[in-house]
Image (tube, rainbow, N blue to C red; front, side, top):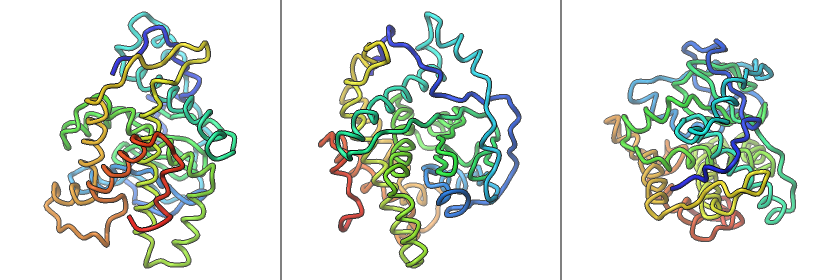
Amino acid sequence: MELNENARVDTGQVDDRRGSGGGGGMGIPIPGGGGRGGIVGLIIAVLVALVGGGFGLNAMNGGGGAESGDNTSLTQKCSADDALKQLDCRNTLYVNSIQAYWRTALPERFGQQYQPSKTVFFSQGVNTGCGQADSGVGPFYCPADDLVYIDLTFYQTLADQLGAEGEFAQPYVLAHEYGHHVQDLLGTEAQMRRQQQRDPDSANALSVKLELQADCYAGAWAKNATGTADEQGQKIFKSITEQDIAQAIDTAEKIGDDAVSKRANRPVNPEEFTHGSSEQRKQWFTKGYTTGDPKSCDTFGGSL
């Protein structure tokens, strides 16, 4: 993977709340509560809970998601000549690429205009429209305030605890969360929550379908990422290699529910899966990448 050093890093797509002291503390998981449908993007929460991190959400109806950060230092850093050497600037550029893709793909493939969502960088704890979260919860999308949240130290956890060390794991994680934003815009997430309420016995199976669709959407972005550009028309990526895609697939496999259970020395019970098995996550990311078409990501249309 090679980023274009001439691409402009648009920090306006990020809300930098690191160091703001925005909450935290140990809370409880709320897999279906809080805000408009609850938090649906916890791609690593189960892992962190099982291998030592614990959950970090307080169940609240609404939260402090309206607060904002100070992007001054981030903007200065990402305007410097060495911007692409900085973790936060690279991740901001990944967000720029993902949203540039959906600005075109959503109207073209679904007939709906894309509404941008900011990514919130936080440290330790943050108040959100879905409740209070700490770093232990991992990256997530909150449909109550339409924001993606991540503590960038998560990537070290991903590498150290799972061995997912490849650089392309990072944009994969972000593209997955923006897949949830697309589901929110299309009404998929809300419809799934209604189905869960009508059929509680199928709640986990429906959650798996939602997560696998987000993986597939991430794959579709990855296929088209080299065609994304900044506002001046500069390509964001110079290249994405098959090795990069292999890194994304490796990450998807390592955060499968079965892999998480095995790593935590717990029994593997498919009925308890909420995000999909390693094979399923690999399969659906690969389908999105192979087709390059988010319309191919109909996990709800039949058996998985």
